[in-house]
Length: 248
Image 1 (cartoon, one colour):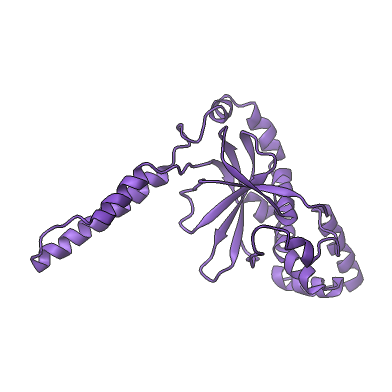
Image 2 (cartoon, rainbow, N blue to C red):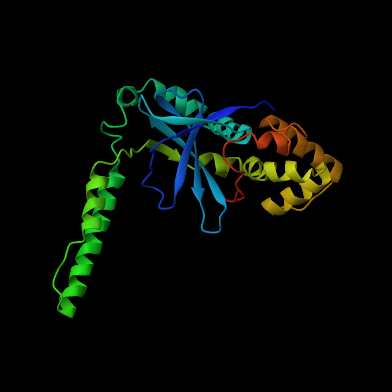
C-alpha cells in the first residue's frame, strides 16, 4: 500500500452538518464533480466518515496529506458514483459551476448568513433579559467584532449532489475501512479481524475458512493488504490517527 495522498479542502463548510467537519478529495485537486469524504467530529472524540458526491469550483485552497486509508475511502466512493460523475461531467450547470471560484455564487457560504442570524438572535435574547432586569439593551463590542469578521469570512460551500449512498451500499467495506488502522496497529490475524468485523456488521460467522477468504478478497478489492501498512508508516501522516466510528 503506497504512501498515497489526499487533499483536505481549506475553508470548506457544509451547512448540512452542525458538527465540526473537514472535506477530503483525491489529489491532485481539480474543479468539477467528484467523490468527497467528510470527516465529522463526534462528541466522544471519534470521527464519522460520510461519503458525498460534490461539485468543486476552481482555485480552491487545499492541504495535501499522506493517508492511504482515506485514499481507499475515496476510491470506493468514486467507484459507487462513477456513472453519476460521467453523466454530470457533461452537464452545463456543473460546467458553469466548476469555472467559478469559491467566492462566487453558488459556492459563497450560506453558513455565514446562518452564523450571523444566530449571533443576532443571541443579542436579541440578551436585550430581552437586560430589559427585564432594567439594565437596558447594550451591544457588546466583542460580539460586534465577531459579526464583522463573519461578514468577511472566506468560508465556502461545496455543492452536494448525493450524500451517504456509498456507506449504505458498501456496508461491509465501509466497516473494514473504519477498522483498518486499528487492526494494523494491533497486528491482528485474519481470524481476529473476522471476529471483529462480524461483530461490527452484526453477522454470525459460518464456515471460518471461507469467511476469512472472503474478508481477505474484500479488503484487497478496496486496496487494503494485511501487513502493508505498519504503524510506523502511518506516523508519517501530519495528523494523528482518529478513532473512526463504524457507523457513518
